[in-house]
Length: 220
Image 1 (cartoon, rainbow, N blue to C red):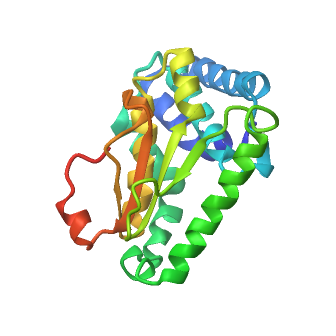
Image 2 (spheres, rainbow, N blue to C red):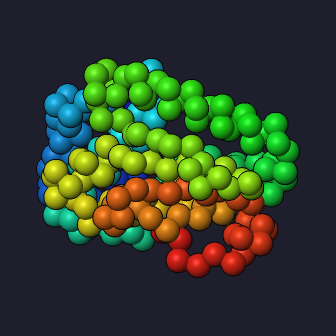
């Protein structure tokens, strides 16, 4: 069983037990596992451990498989409860990395961009080959002087969701970015997402006390 499905197994089985008979819950869990394994085998893992972004796809497979197995009766609030149960402790640990403080240091911002630039170069090299349809990224195209900004022009989660008919559920997964950013006292300003058909996902990450963050409304 994939590590992400294993991580969410207790909370997924709890949800199944609350909504179905034991026999039905067992059958739907078995379908979840089968679908997850099928997609990893047939759709690929985007290069696995060599691709620092690949875990996002593996996590998405787990949730899409569960969503399908429960006849798409699993919503945003259910997802957030499940994430908190499985990952809440780790997410809350992000509070120690206060973005308001960290992003004031230019060397830390440069370190973030160096990491993103490393991924960008690898993506350009391996995309379409070992890393499949991994994310295509541009760094700070609007030249923001504060925080960290980048744009995804492509997203394998979006490609997968549209190909398999799960695009209605994808924005719920995208919202995990807001949860993790907020936990680190950050603000993700994002008014365009591929999931909503905007042609790109534009990320601008600031501390949540920054004037631009306080003024922002409508981020996805």
